Length: 175
View 1 (cartoon, rainbow, N blue to C red):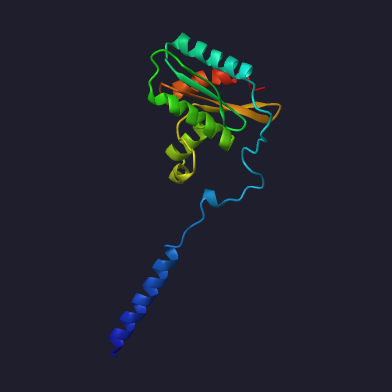
View 2 (cartoon, rainbow, N blue to C red):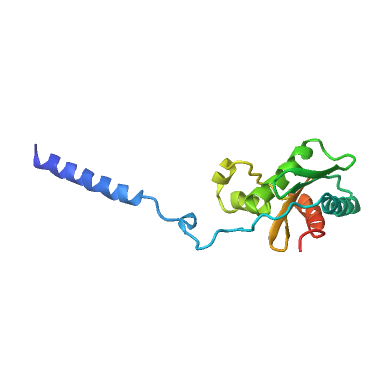
């Protein structure tokens, strides 16, 4: 082997080592380990039908005031549909979407807007691989006395429209 070949091989080896070390994964914000669990709200006694109906009535009233036909779903603390309303003219696809938003807000104990922001602004597309995630706002947990009693989901407009009317309904229950 010539001296030129040895020097070339050594240079290539050094370059490979340098490149390998620079390609190693760098820690990200996702690698931070928090001391407490996020959104660690305990599940409580399921919301009653009367209270679910009141939340839907407030949501529908807000949607009517704005002339936004919506689908509204309320699930209990076990994720079971307890009440639902489809306003006249609300799009059919939003029936299941409103229920999905409510279940996701309940199961993950947070507003679905958090998932939308995480994917759109936080560059966390892996969230879409988790079971029952929906990356659109309009799913709101219903919390009473520090416990999750259910969730409300709205769909029929833009995400921001869904969120506005949904919050009107949630305000009648969450304290």
